[in-house]
Length: 276
Image (cartoon, rainbow, N blue to C red; front, side, top):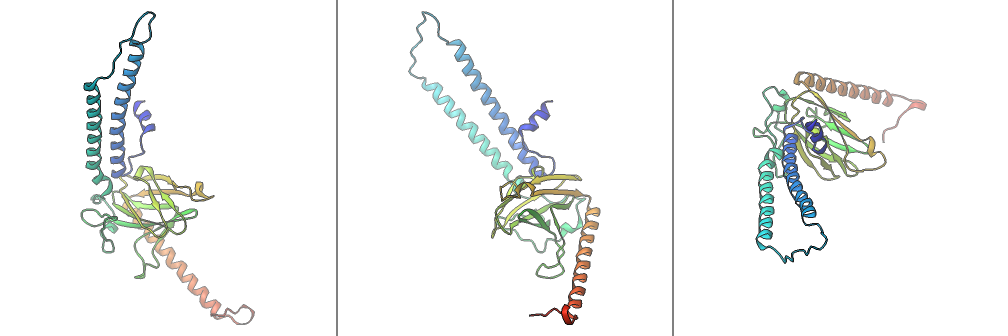
């Protein structure tokens, strides 16, 4: 009963190590705040009862208590410093991606096109599965590595649902094609804005297979409520099969489009298509 009640007041977690670190930091801060709240409210209730007005009684005229005032000021400062130190101690494990696990997908070993910077962080071994997240009114699009052309054309992609391998570090490059959106799947970490002309970076590592649900967390227009984000974590072999199928479908679609273009170019008469 208590864990389920506590979960109501704390962030979702359990899907990725960084989400778990955020959750643990939040719970520690919540516990400290709860103790302070109980002590302050308890002292207030005690004072209201102990020093309530009584008939014929003359209350003591107290002008101040320097020792008490210094004590609670120093105590509050120490609590703030302690929470700040704890936050900075955990910040690295929240921001910095960890290496993929031994059972991660082999595709994560290709880190040749990735780079680290003050904004984009990579795992210690520099290897991750990098996925581009593009927010559009009102749907999320995901581009995967494996383009056929050097300029990135032909990369496999999906809409709305991101499919990832379990136990594999996934780094995200978040962008927007129109207005400001916010990509957030609570069980996999914090929320990040998708801003036109700007790149935001985050990461997660799905520890077990499952469906992780989220949504655009920033009002972006009339279709905002329908702009859901879903991450489906599957075992690495299943992910590799899915990715190969996406590539196959793109190749088939490109071949069909090329055949249609040749057919249109060869038409004469009323159906002729003129190229500019």
